[in-house]
Image 1 (tube, rainbow, N blue to C red):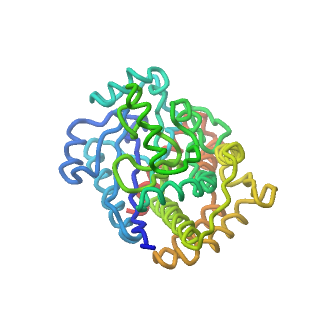
Image 2 (image 1 turned 45 degrees about the horizontal axis):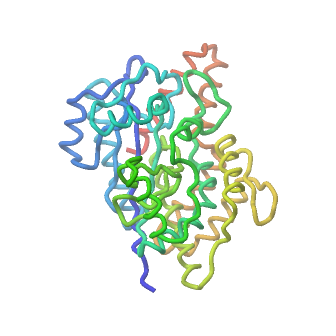
Length: 375
């Protein structure tokens, strides 16, 4: 059986903040024009005009992705600085109010605002998407059905949105509570084939409910534009190296499942109800509460789960020369996710005598520093 390319593409969404007030700021037209002049179609506006989105080129290895993402992040930061702005790569701004934001004046976004009304106006959130190139299409869907089991694990490692509108939500990823209000979100249903997916989408297209499959916003989906599966579960990462680790793990997991498939084996597919419970645990606790090992029937600490995952995909990480990146998941658990780091910064500021507003401003400064650390 032909070996799929397993190329990876990474999309990230950033928020723009004013360097003086640390509040969100709309992207000036000159900023977007400068970015597009340098990066062409690898950069674009997002639904809210305080957001900017980048997308890497298809990359065969994590080393390639690192160079491309570093260039994209650095270019956005450089042009933002010229307007006294800075990008942050966190899924929620710590103290911004969604009611104060406006959406980008493009037909696509005007249509979204009309169709989804108050639900989409709350979308002051940013995500990270990882594409993995897999052919043929039916294999894509088969691997999707199995990869869904690991989506909560990826979410737990990625959590970066503990604050919302100036409040500590108690969740590690508040982003998903906002995003899940949209239709056609959440864990993907089990699908029998790529044809069955296309037929289901076509039902909605024929009725005029959606234009195409790009309006399917599941945590994992067949891409509407590329021969890939697209993981959409992760919060965006302040640190570039954390983005690369999550992408490397996603790529290695996909190849591991392919290796099972060519031996007429497969990862057990559990009821979505059970995987959803793990999704909630990841959303609530990040890496601190453990996830349910459905095979063992018990809650297992995240450190133990990631050790098992590293062993599981070792052959695949070696194939992609990403052993070091995949092994970093241990550090992400031991050192804490962005959600934990943000809370630690706020806590230290409080202990130093800062009030609530000042503590959250300290969190934004921390996020700016982390964005720039690896550039």
